[in-house]
Length: 282
Length: 314
Image (cartoon, rainbow over the protein chains, first blue to last red):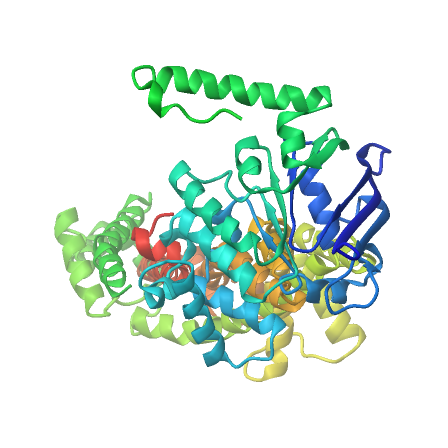
């Protein structure tokens, strides 16, 4: 592996009043790797993401570097130094984002298909009919039935799971180099969660991904490398097995133990009479 | 959609009946005797005999409900009776004659309000807290703080007296229309600039707008398609109700600029206790409000798919 796709170096984000929200964050993501970022809410996971895609509000001051080196580029460039237009062009096409709340991510006034088409048209030179055909093919590919009908549905007429699939499908359509999934399963019911995870696992082999979650179980499923964040700092990072089976930092151990306790309680209540069905504890 | 329109139209019928009843009742609750008023207006001594014969002529000796149904029957045939002052003139003709100038003024004010507040509202939202936004805000404060008679007089002084550009009053040409339109729409423009600006700023923080940015849409697309259209939602309700307000509320402006509209007709009718005219005025205004409300609701349905599915409620 030559140079990494993404290298975040000493990223620090400060509020006007001097509060440090991110403190000296550094990590790298290699091509075709899935990096899991884990931490409780408020630990700075999503903020890190926003910094990478250049959508931080103007009242944050940012220092550090976010070096990005797509496959066709000779040299890595600093995302923090790009102008708005370049970043806008990169978002959705080179770096795609999958968000946490599919139910409110789409504009309620337009049908789903139109929103996919407008995204395609923002990045590709493509006529409307081709974009529509591409969208319908995408809806079919993500395993939804009656794609032509889905195309015309409004966001409120579809379930969270369906919308999340469409969001993932849309993220993949432009063949991005990096997909950032910000808690993509958190707002879903467990069956949808399962399907979405399966879908993301498949995608993982084709592209590079940053997967953000507070759910260790989900992270365990999908991530190759993991960083654990707490209060704006990286407390531990390493391979999945290292983090899960040999955690060094107290906070990581605390997270893993909490999850184990939860799972044990769950197993004790649910499977009291069926010990052979007990879920694997990590 | 069609079902909804039919449903709403059928619902309008009882509402309109209710309104007609209230309009009739209110006038009948007025303390003075219409027969006596009619006599005085025509400068006839209100002797008991004269009053009695006038009551006969106006049908006031019949029971209340009978009178209401007779009136309602006539109204449904667009017959609002005759004015007390000019016994030879039909109220309906008077109303129509004044309605046209009022509609002209209302429509030009509405168009002016719509265009100016959309442009300035959107610009203020995009350049929020800039010098431009602050200047517009000051103008807005002035616009809302100044009553329209004061503003009208100021405009007359500035454009007619001082700059000698426009006529002070009258009706008939586009020059006559400018000052009343400016005066009438100023308050509304001030309101709607603020309305559109704040709605847009609020919508800019929508999760769906954030996602639109994540998708790399152009800023122009995001502002127009996703922020503005979503903001128009509430604005349309208010704007739709502005049309009847403009028609009903042009009293003062019509008076200042000697605009021969409904407002002037109504003031004259109130001063003279010309009951048939007042009754017709109340009824027509109420119908206008109901109809505009209906149109606004239909536009809403058409704009918002969520409403379409729930038959009118989010």
